[in-house]
Structure formats: structure tokens, C-alpha cells
Image (cartoon, rainbow over all chains, first blue to last red; front, side, top):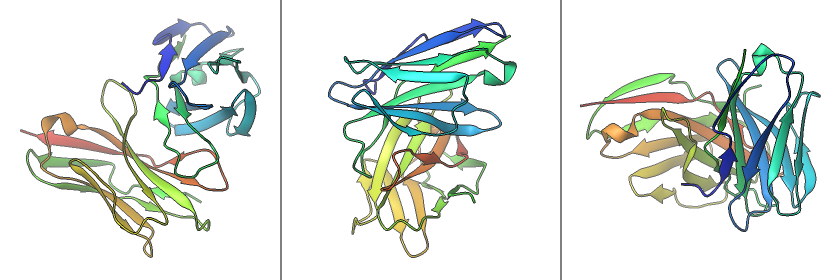
Length: 115
Length: 114
């Protein structure tokens, strides 16, 4: 158990819908990262928050957004869902994003299926 | 250009044998970190081992060791005395000091045979 929690574990929804994925980082970790894992794209970095502020953006679509709340939990919002958004979404957390050796610990993931 | 290359899409190894999973990387940043993660069929990503670019010694964590050859930009994972529970997907990853995200390779699927 990494200490990172994600809810829900599974999500099945229809095209055009909007969903929210939730992540609670490990106790003491200030940084939260979101990744998408799909069969064709592999593991792709989406976005990072550090202590409530957006820190870095990766291959995140405009239909996707995220935020980190004062209690440091984070939510990833996916809207106007398409079939291709079906993937495993991971949240990871780390203590201090400023160090290159800062290990990211991953949550169990949320498996999103868009029908 | 691909920054992390894992050339072995799949491997079959007999139980109790040692196994080496290959990883090469590409960066011009002198300060970076290299990571290996394990993803069993259940889906979670499990951190295994870390190697910093300035670390003089190869990292070890129990049965896992990282064979770090900086000049060759190679960071191979060695699993000693493999077990059936080692069957999983293994990802090599890198984080550069100028960037906060981790870049992952495409992974190697390891099958341990009884």
C-alpha cells in the first residue's frame, strides 16, 4: 500500500458525460501528479499540482482539468468524454517536487470505461 | 525522440533464476533520477528502486538492484532469485531536474515460469 488513495476504482459512463476522479496523497506529500495509461499511448503525464498551485502540464486535453484543494487532495475532471478517454488514470504523490530524486508513489488507479 | 527505451517487450524466465531488464535513456540534463516501477496484473504501480545520476554506487533494494552505467546511459534492473510473484509489467522511468514529470518507457512484461 503506497498510502495514496484514489476513488472510485472503476467508473463506467457514456460518451459526452463528465466525471470526477479523486485522489488523496500520502500524508506529508505536497505534490500530486496525474497520469493516464492507455494501451496505445502508454503512461502519459497529464498535470502536476504542488501545494495547491498548478506546477506543470503535460499532454492534458482541454476537456480535462484538475485542481488541488487546501487539504491537498486533488480532483481530475474529465468532460465531454469520448471512447478514446477510456484508460487507467493514476494519481501519484511526492514530498517535494523541487528535487529530481523525489520518488513518486502511485495510487491504485481509477479505471475509466467510456461506452 | 524517445527518452526511455525498453527493448524487451516480453521475457520468460525460470523461477529462481536472475533476470535483467534492459533500460536505456537519453538526456542532456546532468542531474536526473532513474526509477523502476512494477505493475502487476491488478494494475497498481509499485515503486521498486531509484538511482540518482550523481550516485556513485548502484542502488539495491532487497532482491532488486540497478546496474547503472552512466556513460552508456543504461539503467538495467536486476532481479535476483526470481519468484512467481515477480510476474508483472516493469517500467523504467526518468525524471530530469529541470522537469517535474516522470517519463516512462513502454515497459517489459516479465513472466516467471515454475
